[in-house]
Each structure stands twice: as C-alpha cells, then as structure tokens.
Length: 204
Length: 249
Image (cartoon, rainbow over the protein chains, first blue to last red):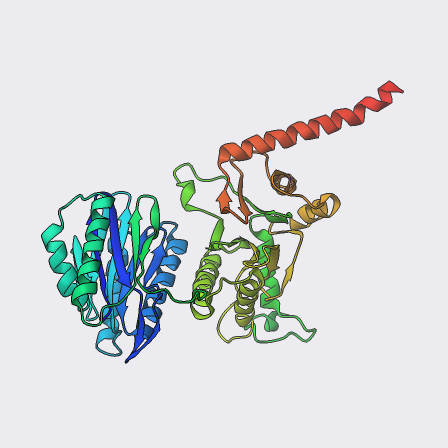
C-alpha cells in the first residue's frame, strides 16, 4: 500500500511519499524516508521491494556522484532519469529490480522536471505522476485540481488534498507522509504529515 | 644490467627492480608539485609549463578532486594519472556505497599505492610513471592529512612535501622554513616553496586550497598573482632589513 506521488509547479517540483515500512501484516516503522536526495538538485522518490529500493537508489546516487567527479559538472535531470531507466532495463530480463521511481529535479537551463520510471523501465517525462494503490486517488485528485505553473502554496495544498483522499478512501492507508521539494535553491525536505508518531529512532 | 630491466618481475642480481627505478626517473622529469599541510588548510601547488597559445588551459587541470573531501596532484606521466585517478574516484564512491562512510585519506592513499604496487609485480605491464600527493580531511576527526605515493607503491604521511622536477630543492626549502600555519599563511608557504624552482607568476603555477568547510577551491590566476606580489614584497623587505643594520652601527 505504498503511496508515492508528485507534480511540477512554477520553478519547482514537489514529491510526497508515505513513510511506512511494512512486512506482511507487521509495520516495522512509520517514519521511513523513501525520498532520497540524489544530488544537490534532484530527488528520487521510490516505492517497491524495500531491499531493492534502497540498493538501487543508493547505487544510482553513487554513480551520479561519480559522474560529477569525473566530468566536473553534474548530470542534468533528464540524463539522470535516462541513466536510471537504463540500469533498470539492463537488469530487467536477468535480475529485475522491483522499484518504482519518481525522479524530480531542477536544472538551471530547463527549470523543474518530473520523470515517471516504473519497475519495468518505462520512462515518461510528466507534469504529475503517482505509484501504488494511492495513485487511483491521488492521480484523480491531481487531474481535477492541477494546472501548470502552480505556486508552492497551491501545490502543497493539492498534495494535502491527495493525502486526505488516500487516508479516507484507501483501506490500509499509511498514516504518515513526507513531502520534499526541489527548486533553484536545491533539494530539501519540506514537511511531514503525521497522524502516528514513532518513538524517535536515529535515521538508518 | 641490460638483461635485468626487460620484465619488471625480475630482480637484478644486486636486488634492484629497474623498471621501478626508471619510473622514478620519469617522475623526476615531471612537473614540480608541492603539498603543505596547515592546521585548518591544506594546499597543493603544481608547476604549469607554459601553455601553447592555441590550447585551452582550462582543459588541463593538474589538481583533481577524488571526492568532496579528498584531492590529488601528481608529477610524472599524466596519462597514467588519468587511469589512477579514475580508479580512485570509483573506489571513493564504492566505499561510500558499501559501508555508507566516506573514505579516510589514509584508506584511499593505501588503495592508490596498492594499485601502483600491483603493477610492479604483474607480468606484461609496466609501473605507473607518477608519484601522487594526496590531501584531505578525515571525515570524522576533521584532522588534515597529506600523503605521498610513488611508483614502487610505498606511501607515507607528510607535513609538507614535493615531488617531480627539482623536488629536492623544494623539500630543502620546506625543511628550513616549515612551521605550523593556518589559512592564508599555508597558501603562502606552498607558493613560496614552489617559486624556488618555478618562474614567478600566476601563469606558471596552479594552486588549489582545501578547507574542511568549503572543500577544494582552485585559485584564480589573479589571486595567485596577488599572493606572489605579497611574497615578492616580503622578500624585498627582508633583503632591505638585512642591508640596513650595518649602516646604523
């Protein structure tokens, strides 16, 4: 029941992900951060098999960093998305990763962008996207209220609408969400939306 | 002797590995490079042979980043350097991926030195023709470090060192003039040491400064010229002071 969704606004892109780590009927923790900061101006929101999710996104992160050291400049969001898709595609017919990814980034020349990359290596550049059962609700809500060039307030308002929809309509809805944003000033955490508080655990 | 330098796997009767020694010769012919460790700043300086008029000098960077907190300069065969630097950069990221920690300066130095040693004990390959100066801050203790490796694969830590052309003169200068410095003083010491063997001017030296907070920063030609001017002024003042006292008595 993992929910990941995001959208592009005026000069920024925002992604939200649920924060529950689940194994069968057990909730391991409800403050698992599934949105990784790929580099200074990129975010990867990932959902799927927990082992694959962490392994794959960390692998992408280190390769993106290596590119930057080798070439003296960072990868563009489009290049990072294509690289990610390529890695998924190469592994697909041998040892596939079960990870769905929304890659959000900001480039100085082209502005904000969002890429939808699913576990069988589909790549789409999108204005809004979502994964999981939550997508039935968040995508419909975004279709109704989204318009291009939204402000941060409008976008966060729409994100909250989606979270409310997921919480009220999904049978095993995740209680907590994390929202992260990327714009010209970089990628950073924006807010948490919590209904259940875990005892404080040091981040993995 | 002629028969003992073909394949480096062979020792000579008097215990030499000639290929390794020849690699050290190649290093001695390379550009001068100097490294100085301060308390909060570490500086690398490299001699820049005059660039051809049509060449884009920005594409010939001699001081490179291995990771956010580690940098390297070298003397010797630059093409060999490219290979070593690439392997080291991969190792830095690989280390971060497997143990979730950045490398320590000692670790990556040991890795590079290990690589250089491997090529002195394999068939059909020649040693890397370069010595490296590796600087960085320990990711946890924040302690600054300067290490040197050479074609034989040995490495050690230094407070200040030089390699390449006329490195002996530079090292002598450093031994005479080294003291614990910080900030701009460390930069000046490194440039003064390099100017012992290099023609004065920002055009002829490349300098990079590493600090804990800001990582590696390459100095602009104008900045180097300004510091060189300061050094020249200090030298002139010292000369004048030496000549003045006899007249006063």
